[in-house]
Amino acid sequence: MTVMVTGSAGFIGFHVARALLEKGENVIGLDNINDYYSPELKLARNGILQEYDGYTFYRKDLCEYDALKNIFDEHEIRRMCHLAAQAGVRYSIEDPHAYQRSNLEGFTNILELCRHNEVENLVYASSSSVYGGCTEIPFTESYNITRPISFYAATKVANEVMANSYNHLYGIKCSGLRFFTVYGPWGRPDMAMYLFTENMIKGKPIDVFNHGKMERDFTYIDDIVDGVLGALDKPMDNEIFNLGNHTPVNLMDVIDKLEELLGVKASMNMLPMQPGDVKRTFADIEKARKMLGFEPKTSIDEGMKMFVEWYRGYNRRV
Image 1 (cartoon, rainbow, N blue to C red):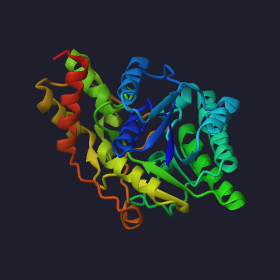
Image 2 (image 1 turned 120 degrees about the vertical axis):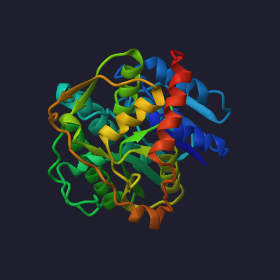
Image 3 (image 1 turned 90 degrees about the horizontal axis):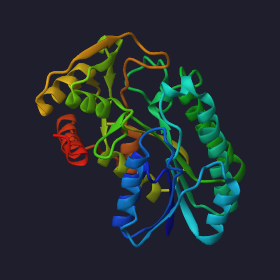
């Protein structure tokens, strides 16, 4: 069956689309290739996907409903993997309207397309940021998420509620995936792993928030892809899943490991906590294990080594 992957030129979307193509699936890719971060990186990812016969790409915006409807008229799309979004906690403070358009208006269009085109399974990206200031460790899907502390998180909470309503009203099968700090080859340049690596190689200081007193449940991209494919293969009647590594890592330990891998000493700007940010994330993944067969396999040491190797090869600076 044909699968639409929105955000197919993005980090997670690219890896998911490639995995589907490797399985022999037909993939309709959708991305607007915006300039939130390097369009060149997005085009490079998309160029790899376009080498597959089963890949058809449309450079369209989520808010262009008529254009999206035309794509559905041309293709028999039965599964939707919706990964496109305006990402980033800190940027949502600078430009909330970008999040309103992409994450709210755009998601409404996706839901309507699923409703009117007999889509059998909608898998969409949520985020660990929905847990806000949660102090109940590890984070479980049953936690009350009605008090997000960033506008980005608020849009992701809204997506889960919107999907719930469409499931109730129209019976749409859907699964929301709360991703926990995804990293790896072809990663996003606005995220810590990429930013730290790039600045350290260039001899520039890195910004370390909350004076380094932070923990993240870093999750390698291949493990995330396994979880997404598991959800695509098993239509659910409106479920939410954490996809994380279930192993929080101290930010300073990540910096120490990067110093070892790169052979350079990090110069650090120790800064206070940023608005909308959280001190710790920690995924309870028992539900995903039981219902999706999700089992992360990549340790932080293995994953960071593979990321650094990719970064050096892609940028050809070292």
